[in-house]
Length: 302
Length: 152
Image (cartoon, rainbow over all chains, first blue to last red):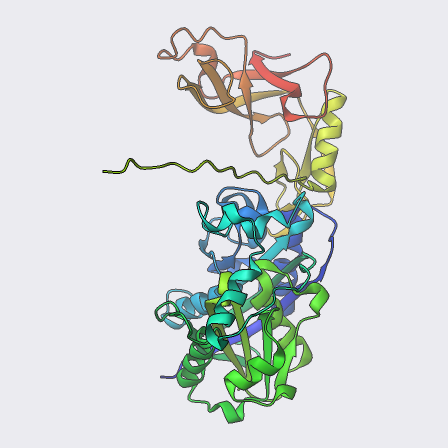
């Protein structure tokens, strides 16, 4: 299977405790700059794929109130309630199928508008049992690790600092004159069954990576670097071991800016693009309690 | 058979929405009995309330302009179904294009007998003239003003 999606441009508002401005202004700043970077006008955009959280944004169906800023005014708009890498491969599917020629993929977070961001993760817990116990959501991951290892696992990491950010990438058909020299060539997600007790917590990540590499027909040994969005509770050594790569190939986000909500994967992708692609480069993310929802995309030079 | 149990829960997250400088200017204007919009010099659109970018042209709109308090009705609904926190029914909500604006802004329509809410008064017809009326003690909220029939 071969599908190459052109990367025309990108933009990032670097993660920060507070980025001044309204949420729609943050998003517009990022999407409009990505268009400038791509040399593409809004008239050439067919639609937008985005990753956002109504809970983080404090809006019901937040994208409906943010349409003007994403660039989807009177255009196609698709949203994932998942990490932004899922929006990337959704956009790639739309371009690859011929349903669209050029799209914006964007994601954001403005946690600084939330009075108590620390209260949000607990809402992901099942309400009648787990949430009533009021334990840290990271404990879910620890319990999975405990089942995997058969040992006691501490949940002792301090909560991450929530950050504001906005990121956008313009993708287009590989043959588009503004496509540039980089392509998205592999796409994978953890679409298999939920983990059974005792199964490796990184199995979804392994599945997503394996699917992306198989799609692109690229062996893991050819991958130069792996940019990781999210997965903050998992060490680089464990990720490297799970993916059978040297730890030196793992690139993590700054731990102080790692909690980027659904934007984590897209921020990692933009960081990879900004640092330069010198060979097959994986971008991975995993979100949700127990990091069961994993995504991977592969970026290559043409 | 055991009866189904309900476990009480609550979901409350507070927000302090940053509204940006353009929207802030709009709410500051309301305190003075003024309504402000934003002009997009590329396509001539005047958005009310103002935005720092134009959604259609996708360019920054860095100019605030004051619009008139008179306008015409572009859309209307009479609400007869009560909703949590809403005014007593029936009440009318209208979209009004104010003089000098190219977009419409929503607010309540007062000064019209809505009866039982099933008959549309002439004053609420599309393109009927209305004008903004301000509260004697504006607080910088969208509820500082409402619309009434006719020209001020």
